Amino acid sequence: LGGPALRPPRLALRAPYPPLARARCGARMGAGGTSGAERSARKGARGGGGVTPATQPASSQAPMRELFTPGFEAPLGGQVDTRTLNAALNFAGLAVVVLAVVVKLLTVDAEISRGWTWFEIVSRLPSDNWSDYTSFLTASPVLTKAITSGTVYALGDILAQSTEGKGLADLDRVRTVRSSLCGFTLHGPLSHLWYIFAERLFDLLHWGAWYFVPLKILTDQLTWGALWNALYIAAIGLTSGRALPTIQGEIKETVFPLIRDGLKLWCPAHMITYGVVPIENRLLWVDLVEILWVVILSTTASASKQARESNGVA
Image (cartoon, rainbow, N blue to C red):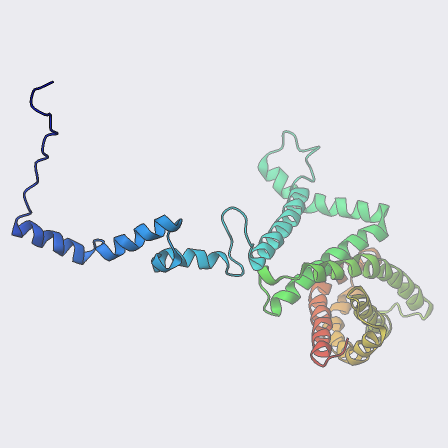
């Protein structure tokens, strides 16, 4: 109390930068540093609650624009690319079917092959699978032929879409299911009845000799062949929701071209059908050839639909 007043110590001022240091600092600022104007702008933006879009660099704005681009797939669940999803679903469906068929074919002797060598297992696969098929055919002929035709018509439609230039991402699953249902519910059971009826008719007409095979083929194509083509076009049209007048127009447009194309394909094929193959296995042989025919049928039905849609017909 009475002594000298206490004063806070003076802070030592730093010496100014030497000229060389100031030059280096200015070079760094000019090359890539932050200027005073930019720092002021950023401070003002932080004071207002964040970095404004005007001060964001272009590289940081681009991802934000992509988030609102149609088809962008966000990491935590945004819009999903439709073509990618279709490709994944189609691949998964085909993989499951193929895997199931392969496992079924390879495990036909699973219950009796204990102790067999790999050579014995593989060498018995063709004959034992054929025996399994014929036993199932004898027990349930209509169901066996329905499953066979349904499988063939699905495969044929997939091949038809591939010939139209559609890839795995563009494959129309609903169209394939329609074609498979036509094969399962219509072609398999009706073909079973037709070949029984045709064999009785040919026996009644005494067409058993080999030189009557051409007459059998003409009878098949001008009756059952023409009827089935019309039934397929009608079934695809009805399940697609098209109007009856439209379906009638499609049948009229396609009946003669399909008969013409059918004679080109089925004349050589039915030489084997009616000349070599037993009646109980005819539909299996026909279904193998039918894969090519379904490609023609499915392509024709799709082309007729697209032509009418382009003309404004429902």
